[in-house]
Image (tube, rainbow over all chains, first blue to last red; front, side):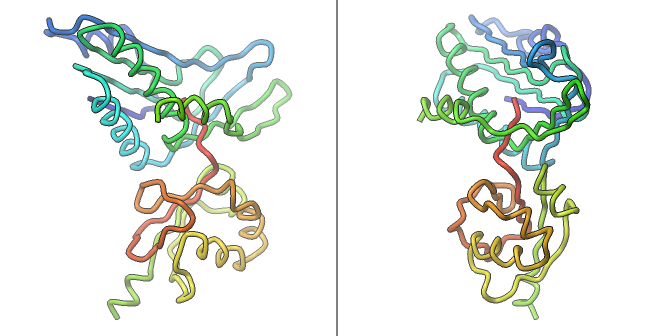
Length: 148
Length: 91
């Protein structure tokens, strides 16, 4: 179990290699990478703010909840903060289990809970330079509710 | 004396709540009438137009006591750090 908040980029392949190094009991790994979407309907830039201390605590609580619900052998959450551009990585979630179903479900759970509980806030800048705080979406709340 | 110290808390503001308030953190002495999170928001709104604006829609304000999410009816007694922020948008 590990959760990190950082400004620097991450390498999903290297993170999974470190997570599974020396382990022969892991039969399935699911990774999810969230990225800044540019192009049509996308953004020109994004700033991610968070609540230092609470973010790490909340991510650890969410991760512990996933481990209590599924037989996971390992998990990892990496979330970036600061200034990001289209195509940049935002978040990495990796779950490892003996079998695929637990890994798939736990990865979905971690993302759904993270989006509704971890104290991050996105401010997006559009092509004309207007910066607005992203509004929370009801679809994210309903996605999280399906696990309760 | 110790009672007075207990009512002294650190307030934190994030995202557009921080921008509207004009500051990210401050230390305050809670007045006696403030018992719950909801009372605290009511009192903050009386502290100036920027606070009244930031907390104009209390239903969209989220609160954490000592880094744990809480509902508006929760009592603030004993908390050392109280944070106010919009619904979260990470991921």
